[in-house]
Length: 396
Length: 200
Image (spheres, helix red, strand yellow):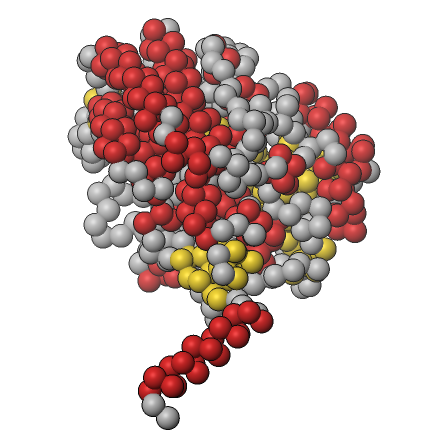
């Protein structure tokens, strides 16, 4: 038989089998894929272009913080938790400190609370700007990345100005914010306040941040290709979102007007005016749009907080050695990614007996197997990216 | 607590919330300490409790567990002697007023098992897998009770109090390069008496 004959036979065989059935193909995505925001592996069973089943494989970033916390003191744990969600490190520190303060019945001074609030909102802007820029990149548009990361850099500079750190500020202490500089036991510690010029620079930066939001609205949301790829794609129904614990902007995009900043009182948000943006359809487009609007609201809160910044101490009177009385409490916060909470179980020691860390991305990602079922392969990245998760926040 | 009333919700509110939801499900006990409403139920009523409360508190926040043990390999043991057991707890909340409650139940250390909540809250799937690998708790009826974080073939249950933390075993703290000494117990007493402010 000639080669050509063999080839023709082979060809006809393939054609026959295609007509009869298409066997499921296992498609591996990751663990190292640029759109996965860390090390995430997706094992998808695909039938042609349609996904039948997808199983996320997580744990590559698991650092065992809940176990580590059991051998650390509370001030040490602060340094750990800012590494959970490194895109908004500061925001993760606050609820833990509020939980410890609640158990110790310490009330941080108003100025410390305002500073915490301003920095938390800055972390939100920084985190959302990363999303606003990286999501279009995942869909093939590189320009927005350059555009909004410039403003994010300014926000990071402001955070660095106050805390000395861009990603892992480690700026919170029990009873307030870090007031002292200087290391070692024989060096006199100097009390530090907000650096000079911080207020003016912040207000100026907020103007630019709002400017970049307007640009992104034209550039991305007004882009026909972006709209076509995200409208009606990856819809999360409300009841499913609640059942899976999907929180934050992802929940609000599905039409639920719920924001922990409005209902809980871990920080004095009740003193400021701001709106809760929500979506209508719960699709990728809405998740993008909600985050974009949230940046504007965050800038609005920061402006008010800077203008009404109270004078006073940065830390309440606390014992030199932090020992937390026996008790249990759960404190949650509206982090950029969603509900971030700490369940602290104290047995009277210098560290927790048990610390349960409830991170937003873990629950947000757990809806993925449901969400990707029946979707087309080209939509996988669009849906995955729109959830805005960070693997450190998933794995802890 | 007096200067800023908005900082910590008054305890009676939390007690009221716990009692209201506790009554719906026939809870063993309720409490509202530290502004955290908590209800305790029996393992037998675990699933029914969640099914009943889902109508009022549809948001599934998390499921986790605590290993109560007087013998500990890491950290400090509990203040008083405790009966060794596992406490499994979940948190449900609403998405309107911000009310939420922690539901907990005790299960035995020898045969730690509970019926799964996957049928009530789909989101319990990953949380139960985590509690399974970390504490060795079996969730009956779970569709896929496999390792979530840990690598294949991992032995032991890391979040059990009896599981040693290897890095602490090989390198105790404070180490030789730590700048500051570990404060002694005497300092603790002195610090508490004077109410000395850190950093002064």
